Length: 191
Ligand code: HEM
Ligand code: HEM
Image (cartoon, rainbow, N blue to C red; front, side):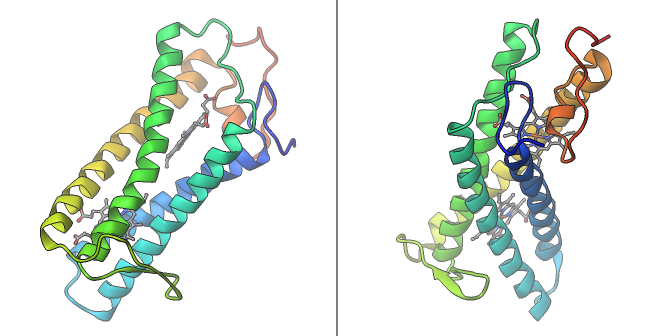
């Protein structure tokens, strides 16, 4: 299983990053939706902290992932993919990366503005340079929640596109991103 990307498949590290972020996001959304409705308790406060740690980890991983992407060839779209689909894939991947960077930043700054700053893993304080500001915290909270919704919609479209490739077009697009080393179909057998 190649470590780096090759012209026809994502390598081990690119796939590790992809599925690690997938798992982290499941954790982040599950915590976000649960913590909000809990009555004030130690568990609620802990869940807020866990949510912040998981989100900060998403940020770290996505920065590493982008660095790796920019220094690796990205597998090409299957031959014959229409231009608009290439454009849609490029745009949606760009937006996914952008939201995965901006969401943790808004969460981090918002938390500091609420005077509940991020202490990563309970050990490393990461104060924001913006200080306390309730009014701006409210605005950033709205932005954070709206981006969360947008992220979910984009992931939904992304998964449908992956299934469209796999089930309807029967090409290698999903296979080459699976977390395990799936055997690829040779070109020309996609029927
Ligand atoms: C990609 C990473 C992240 C995702 C997907 C995410 C997602 C969410 C979502 C969906 C909510 C809304 C919950 C609701 O509907 O009430 C939320 C709330 C929140 N997030 Fe994040 N978040 C991320 C990163 C962070 C980070 C890094 C921090 C702080 C360091 C943070 C701090 C918060 C706080 C404090 C709230 C609660 C706002 C409130 O109700 O007072 N988030 N997050
Ligand atoms: C948390 C949810 C997910 C996020 C944030 C996400 C994000 C991304 C991003 C940013 C890329 C572009 C990779 C690059 O070119 O650098 C990508 C590729 C891909 N993802 Fe996801 N993904 C998620 C979940 C899934 C799921 C559940 C599936 C499968 C059902 C999937 C299937 C794929 C496939 C097949 C590709 C390769 C597309 C290509 O070859 O151009 N993803 N994903």
